[in-house]
Length: 101
Image 1: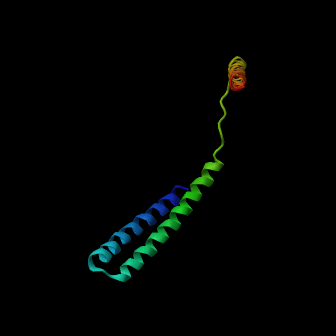
Image 2: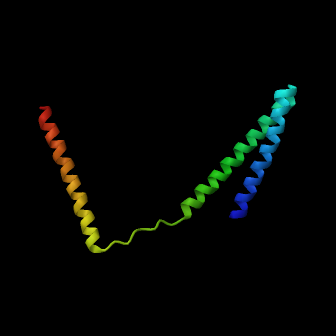
Image 3: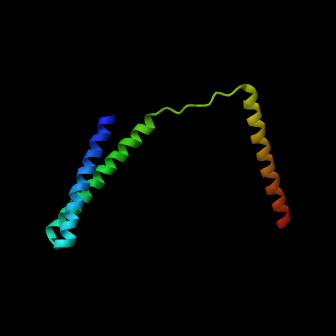
């Protein structure tokens, strides 16, 4: 996988070098052809970046999610805290509803 990333990075770096040269020619020498080449290079860079982004997303999806190991006591603590927060939220909503009447 690493070599694949490296090949994309090399490809993007080479395209950037070409782009700099073409933009220089376009802005200083006013060559239309350089402008067209620069647009084409930018388009190819965009395609490469999209492919690289897709590859990264696919790799991220394949990485397993590591779940935390909790002791039963800690699990009960978290459950109680969550239930308390839910009860407080419901009480606040009920109080707010009564105040609006």
